[in-house]
Figure 1 (tube, rainbow, N blue to C red):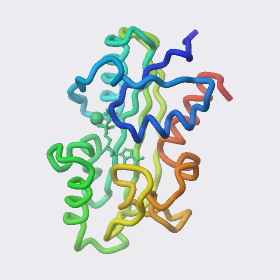
Figure 2: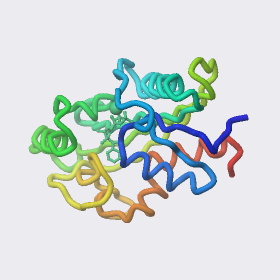
Figure 3: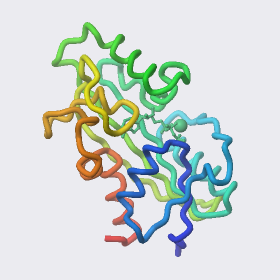
Length: 198
Ligand SMILES: O=P(O)(O)OP(=O)(O)OP(=O)(O)OC[C@H]1O[C@@H](n2cnc3c(O)ncnc32)[C@H](O)[C@@H]1O
Ligand SMILES: [Mg+2]
């Protein structure tokens, strides 16, 4: 049985930590891997699943604790699913603003009907670094890429992601609303079921 009072989150992304902690509630304390190490593992996998497992194992090895990892990104239909697993590195590691500027530029002449995209989130939970049976849960969130940034909430590509069911950008949603319907919320829902937390 996993000791949830000591679960480490294998992520250096403060936005993910905030969202995942809010979804898990107070009974589980997510400790950031940043408490143990500032070195980020190289994400050498070719899929979200591979990178999530790689990050979870690395965090568990460093901390000696069970670890949860989140590998996520934005898959744009017109770009054949890019930037996908390379979403964080889309503008060569220059950060969210540069990633968003690049995506807006690449998509600037693409008509509305071809601007479909999905956010993807894979959560991987390992009980220890060599766990042969990681728990894997996936969530998708369908939307469209906007032609200009809008909204101040969230992080990453949120200002560019139109949410059809709410008729606003993901960065215009209240954090508590995003946490009900996002790719991450869907993956976390499955994880809670797998762990018998609901
Ligand atoms: O690997 P860790 O340390 O967890 O942090 P990271 O930010 O590098 O995370 P990923 O490698 O999983 O890359 C995810 C990319 O997708 C973006 N992304 C993921 N979820 C998002 C969300 O809910 N809203 C907006 N952008 C998101 C995020 O900004 C990154 O550019
Ligand atoms: Mg990363």
